[in-house]
Amino acid sequence: MDKTKEIICIVCPVGCRLKIIKNIDTSTYSVKGNKCNRGKIYGIKELTNPTRKVPSTVAIENALYTRLPVITDKAIDKKLIFDVMDELKKVSVKAPINMGDIIIHNILDTNVNIIATRSMAALKK
Image (tube, rainbow, N blue to C red; front, side):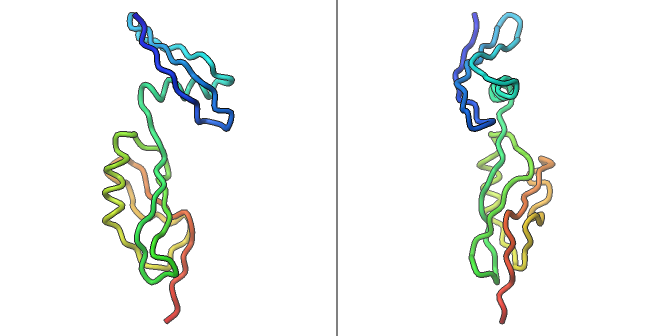
């Protein structure tokens, strides 16, 4: 008996409707509906080990705005997203910050860093 799941591919703007079929006997996967090989890879990965990049914000002091936009520099396991968000709630940085600065090294021992996605200058006193 095969196990089937249908998802929409998010690799590119086309948004192919994928049907991923796992053959229970052979533990192999087949993908239908993809218009490119990236869709096939995405479909299998989404069933076996789904990951996402996580955009968010952290508190920032001495800047024009009170929140600094950040993102993970690599995709993380979907199961860890809420744990990462809980860690980000605890973080406060002080301006100045440059886009690309690492805000948190190796969050949750994942070998993934949290980086700033915009620069924020310090307020002049």
